[in-house]
Length: 260
Image (cartoon, rainbow, N blue to C red; front, side):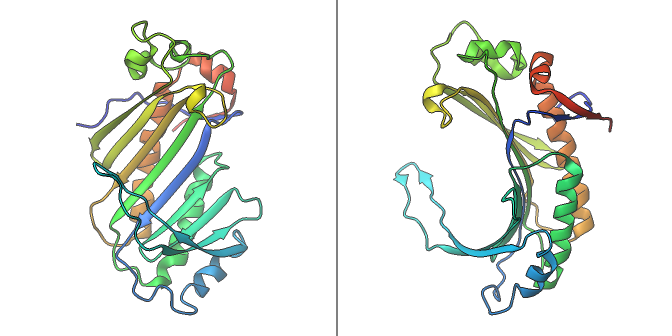
């Protein structure tokens, strides 16, 4: 049964709490990846927006019951970046992603994803194995010194015990992960209080990390992918707005409100 959320307008905030937005498409391994010139047509297509090109090595670390598993061999990764370093496109042998730390509105991200999907048509991608859209918010407020202070700003239904008197102000770090089955895919919500001791910025914040994905294999179709991303985004927007209160909206500052 889909999550029950009210329909909310899209609000663009002056003090945007989004730290990172990632859209990723995974596909079967491209055996020709790494051949000289394989990515040249894609680089040509993306060079106007992303003139900075570089190659990296991606290393995955797995944490299991027995501790940290041995890291596999590094995986080659190509990255296209804009001059401001706010947007990037990553291409590997089994995925393409669009990432930004400068997110303002959905239309901008959608347009860039469409452009990347069009540029990727020449890579010979046979199918899509996973589609994901992830929004990571770090919500801060100067009046928050401990978890119970979030009751002014975050919906109590989301806070649960962390915002209650039972645990008080001494909670250093409390995160919950919720996995929901939706009609369009799977919705993962990671949220909770991150205290000063656990925060890299030395200021407490409320994490709201929403990851909507579909791992049902299907054909690689740009139009279908964009339509599904529209659904992911609409649900994510409603979830964020359902999670915050007017006092937080006032603090963030509403720059623009868009219906639909």
